[in-house]
Length: 309
Ligand code: SF4
Image (cartoon, rainbow, N blue to C red; front, side, top):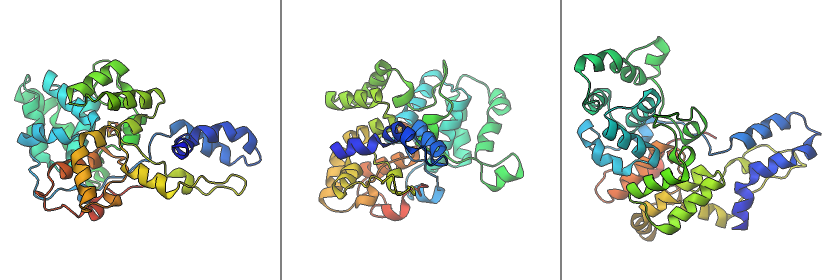
């Protein structure tokens, strides 16, 4: 456990060590940036990597699929169902996530139109339709269309950019909610275990928001090219294995299934490694909840979201 502390506190320790590193001016801005912004590694998104062949990814099935969504997306879904509306950044974060789980443009438009049940078709078409099409790259400039629109947001992006204001539901509840509201939301989605709640509160207090959702091993210490006078912290095999399998809320919510795939050896370490993207959270959760029913079972290594360092 001591090693975990060393690793997770690495950015802070690095920041404190900066005065002693003044012999290398080039290092300072890089380390300061990492220290200030360290939450989770950013991850790229690949539609083919998160596809779930055979799954019913349709507008009518989103309510059922939402049980496999991470807390940020469950919050958006619940807000949408409660208010029949979401503000701009909530729509954007949620649209891109839905695009990432494999909801096609036509189904996504059906989903938003039916969800915004208090407005007319005319209002929907004038005020909301274009933005959904733009997110999918169906309209807009050449580069938007060539690039198939925007990529679903990673945890890093959600945690660090555009905090939600009053009446907005985007962002990450572990970071942007008060402790009371976070516990209330966790209870509402079925996470009531006092040990888990206590751990989440501790993670939040220490500003380890991502660990509350998914315990992670920071990749930077052994990937950055460190100068000789600043030795890298190399995680031990035990720590890596612990990091690969320790999750807070995710592990609690999938306790039985994770035990099963570990016991029968059907999932390897690569399929249980740290989640750093909401769409990967969904894919892994969906596969675990549908063990034995989905054709992509056992192909996790091939199908994992490609991560960028
Ligand atoms: Fe969503 Fe990532 Fe926050 Fe989990 S850590 S709730 S997946 S943004």
